Amino acid sequence: MKNIRIKGVVVFLILCLFFKNSFAQQDNPAPTTYPKVTGFFALLAPIGTFSNNGFTANFSKSTAFGLPFGLNLLKSDHLGFSMEMVPFMLVQNGSSKMNYMLFHPGVMFRFPHGFTITPRLAFQTDGRYGMTPVFGKIISSQKNYQIYLSLSEPARFGNNLPGSYTTAMQLGISF
Image (cartoon, one colour):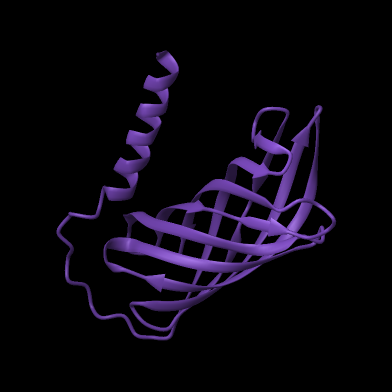
């Protein structure tokens, strides 16, 4: 019962973060001039991975995390292009290493209230490849930066390994 309460609280907090600014009245800032280039940096934490070998939870026997950074070329209020690079670290048995680098180009579909859907291609230096749909929401917008939360759903193939599907959370800042 305690486990269900904790999970419920976590889900509630995530939903609050996603919908915090959705209904807030927005000031009318000066119109943005396009094209516009923005940068970003984040922390990405995989939650778990499904494959033919079953489910593997992050933080159980090892901990993996990524540090995404990149550039966005915003073409309009509704469309942009993004190039992201993500070094992935693996902490296991008391040691850590850089596991691989991910090259992650994508198209940004931007919606009102800070929602973004970014389907990305994925090319990893360990020989894996695939795609990653990313669902993002700006949770705090300041004059010179924005803080965002994203849910990533990577699908990976190749390198003589079974296909896999992962769920990950990302917290980042764009400027």
